[in-house]
Image 1 (spheres, helix red, strand yellow):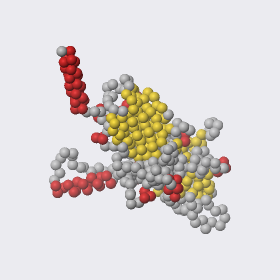
Image 2 (cartoon, rainbow, N blue to C red; image 1 turned 120 degrees about the vertical axis):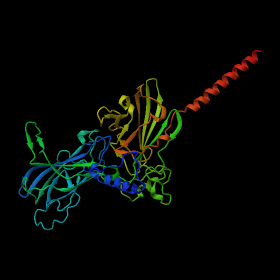
Image 3 (cartoon, rainbow, N blue to C red; image 1 turned 135 degrees about the vertical axis):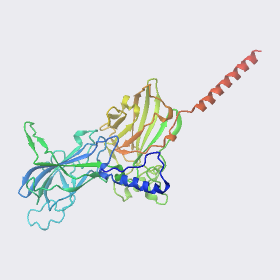
Amino acid sequence: MKHTMLPAIGSVVPRGAFAAVLLLLLFSFSTFSSTEAYDPLDPTGNITIKWDVISWTPDGYVAVVTMYNFQQYRHIQAPGWSLGWTWAKKEVIWSMMGAQTTEQGDCSKFKAGIPHCCKKDPTVVDLLPGTPYNQQIANCCKGGVLNSWGQDASTAVSSFQVSVGSAGTTNRTVKMPKNFTLKAPGPGYTCGPAKVGKPTVFITNDKRRTTQAMMTWNITCTYSQFLAQKTPSCCVSLSSFYNDTVVNCPTCTCGCRNKTEPGSCVDPNSPHLDSVVSSSGKAANTPLVQCTSHMCPIRVHWHVKLNYKEYWRVKITITNFNYRMNYSQWNLVVQHPNLDNITQLFSFNYKSLTPYEGLNDTSMLWGVKFYNDFLSSAGSLGNVQSEILLRKDKSTFTFDKGWAFPRRIYFNGDNCVMPPPDAYPWLPNASSKLVFSLLSTVIVTLASLLILLNQS
């Protein structure tokens, strides 16, 4: 990538050149393509798609397409992934196992043996659980749900088999598909071009023999929260035992309440709440949130609960304000310098994330299976909570200046909006302590004088 020299920080820019410098900055940022999405807490996270040609047919080939979610904490939940591409030539899909295309397209030119799909740009979705065994292959049929690699690597893989016709029948004549798209289920992922890779090696079930793909193409897809949604999807509120102030999510974090449009949010005290939720006609993945000052579907509350001699205790509560969405296999990523010394975690699973060598200040938390791994939609059951007991590091621990609060929180891979630092519940300041000390001294002095007067 060609780099452009910019004025040094602190240098004086002539007034006439200011507009030019601004345009130069905008141009510099625009040279980064959307495929260069970067997550500082998961710098190598991506979804890798392998397209393995495993055999040739009279007019094409059979391929196994496997999707690996190498992201540590970002998963794909219901209604699941959909994968699209554009054929390089006039290929058709004769048959599929473990998945299906959403449309067949125009197959009128075929008189006998109608293909599964004739579209130039097919879109493929996973089959649902319970699919007949003769239509399944390994790692298929989960309704498009794909777990994160850090949460459960065994369920972070999805596969399907496709028989392609009207294609090349050798390594030299076959052409790679192009313009790959991945929705999970909405936008957010950008896929790079298919690249020829080292042929994949497969191990037989008895583990006594290996076979090799005829050829392998690799496609890498990366996620950008800015592409996924125009507004944030979660926010953080704070409180502590040493300050009565509860710092709520910033007002209008995820949008402002539109009083002129009654359907923009739902009043939880509405006498006809169920009918209001069920009658809303928008898509299921469009949030229908409870009316709040922040209007976010998800709020994470961090409460500094107790202080011991060698430990301190935090309570975390996740509340769902979205009436349209249940969150299965949810996870929370928290960054705080004391997370390298967790003593005990109650009712959540825990895994330390080390995106950089020597840095251990990030943890992933998620629910216990069949207990609280399912976050229900808004209502009385729409929350999960746990407490963390942390051991103090005497060289760094303090309650001063908001140190006890997290630096960053992600919910399901999306960065949550934190309150401004100057709003954090801080310890009582030095001046209030001084006033208290002076009042104590005055009271003690007056009490002593009264005692002396009574004695005399």
